[in-house]
Length: 560
Image 1: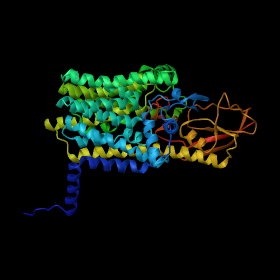
Image 2: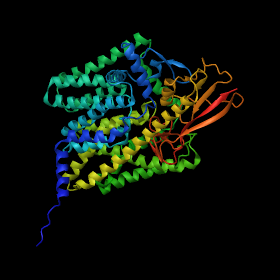
Image 3: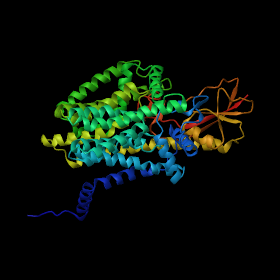
Image 4: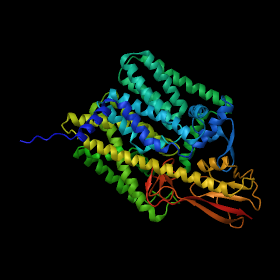
């Protein structure tokens, strides 16, 4: 009888696996550095400049973060009218810039800390909710929404870090009766609400959990007064400083925008499901081990009904006028594919609650369903940044489902689970790379323009985001409908993939040249012709889209 002995290579691989499993926080740190390290030099884009400009203002006037004006929407507005977020993330940018500098690499390096905090916090929270916390944390990290959001200097990942650690301290504090942990959770909850208004949703979420778990109300009820008091003070302070309550202003803007876009209920629901499934694609990749045949058939049947509704709904894409008819079928297929994934995400939360019917399962279900409803039907637009708070809950639900399957005799092989996670990580990395290439193309376009034309006051431009940030830094002037004088001989630059762009009449301007810069290839997060609208569904009904991605660029007009 011949006994086979393991090769030295397989022994070494097993040792590495055991080490990673025994040191989850080092494993998560390594994963974050490997996945986000290549994007440290990512140019600023989309709403990054808003946080940077506010941070510069904080350096000069620390108590008045929004006390300046900027071009945003064809004319100048006060910053407090432009931004829809509280200022804590801007203070973090100001602190990081004061220590490390204002370069892209410096600030992205500083934002690795919130990303690490989310991963570590999810792992620690999952220890109380499932038996495989590392799986839960990796499933959170290996999602497109987490990786892309972690390559920005916006407030979303920082808020999620406060959110997750609030959960950690709250659950530990209520279970042990430790008032110091509950006090720490209250402080973190306050910081979450000051980073992004959605952080205030922790108050009803944790109140519901604590009430159902029948912990002493006197212990936890008093701790909820701190974030409530903070919100009241914030209302008073912003009213006194700017003559307007910024929290109420954000709510009014959300209601106004919902009416302005005019999407139907069916379109909104499908888009919300598509964003949920695409942003949290790890659930789709985990289908081989996640569901029983009966459950998969139920989800498939519901997905088929949605597919039928989507293809029969002639108004599904009617609001996207820049989407070519030739691309409509491909976009619809992607919407329905990721919408099926969105159904699976919601089904994970619902079935987990139906199985356990306890405070923890209720917490996870409300976390997922509440965020989905807010992102789809309350927020000013559907965007990936609003889906992001679900990511840790989905990672934990995946790990809990694997625990349940193991107990039920449907143990998934470690290799199968690892392969599903790896596939999700690859997609997430490719989506993050596409967003990186987009930002790089925008900066390159702005640099080509500034190198070609003198900054003597005769070069004006339309558009915002990174395009505005880099052109303004080079000395070009933003076009203002109220203030800019369109003199003959001046130039007006109009970007091709940007917002707040007004077409010019041929009798007033002559096209001088067109600048094109290669951007993402076959996959993009932000282009109307492909249906990709990672940062707003007003741009496209998909968080990212596959297809023929046009180059970035701008048109240069000479004014007559």
